[in-house]
Structure formats: structure tokens, C-alpha cells
Length: 187
Image 1 (cartoon, rainbow, N blue to C red):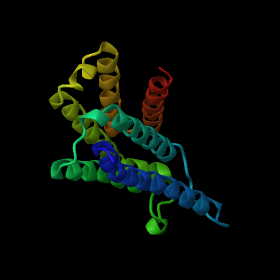
Image 2 (cartoon, rainbow, N blue to C red):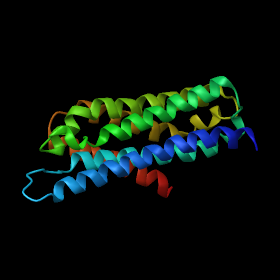
Image 3 (cartoon, rainbow, N blue to C red):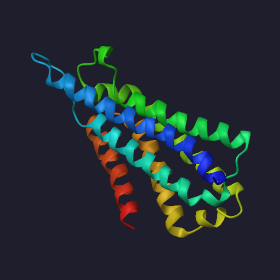
Image 4 (cartoon, rainbow, N blue to C red):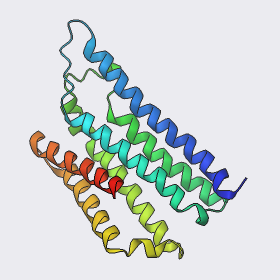
């Protein structure tokens, strides 16, 4: 077993749990909406946040493959991977409210949790960039013009989504964040 395979087994497990948490939250939300006599409103913002977190999580999963030659099994690596994937789990858990939350409208929930969830995504982006910068074999990937532009766009859109006040503007920004990932996946 290579160092990458050993470390990725932990990373993959934790990211898989994050995916399960995100999909489980969606399932609980749909169940809650389908209850008879309920007035629960799903809206657009929380599902868009869920899609963004899912796409972001998948991008970091693929980034793990990109850095596979630069991974060594050390205590620092294992702690970093656990912390990194733990932030994803926390974000995925917070995207949808718990069943007993009592929130009647998921758009309200979005505005309550977006700064924590999106702030976590921004923190993970910064951690990934720092890792690339301090790893000589990976640093050149950061300096490609397309990488620079896409990273700046991502950071600016996340920041805007954290600050915007109205639901209409928030929808547009969340759609732009999702579109940015779709474009990256198609390139």
C-alpha cells in the first residue's frame, strides 16, 4: 500500500461520510416537506447551497488525486487530512436543518448557516492553496492563468454569497458558484 492509498483511505472515508450527511439531510428535508398538513417550504437557497457544497467536495476529492505523489504518511498529514475532511463534514451537516429544528422555511435556514458553511469552504480553499504553495512539485499548477482566474472567481463569489442580504441576489450568486464548477468540470 502506498502512502497516498493509506492517507486517502482516511480522507475518502471522511469525505464519503460528508456526502452521506449531505444526501441524508436532503432526504430528511424531502420527508419533512411531504408530511401531511405541513407548511414547510424548501425554497431555492438551501438546495443551491447543498449542490455547491457537493461540487466543492468533489473538486477536493479529485484534487487529492492530483497531489497523490506529494503525500507522505506522517502524524501531521493525518491530522491535516482529518481536520480538512472534518470541516467538510461540519459544512455538510449544517446545510440542511435537523428534523427537530422547527424552521418553516429553508431560505431562512440558508441565511442562518451560510457564513459558517461558506466560510468553511473558503478556509479549505486557502488550506489547499497553501499546501500547493509550499509543495515545490505542485506550486507551478497555481501560476497558470486559468487557475488564477478560476480561483479568484471562486473566492470572490464565496465572499459575495457570505455577505449578500437579499434572497434574489443570493440565488444569483449561488447559481454562479455552481456554474463555475460546471465550467471547470467541462474544461
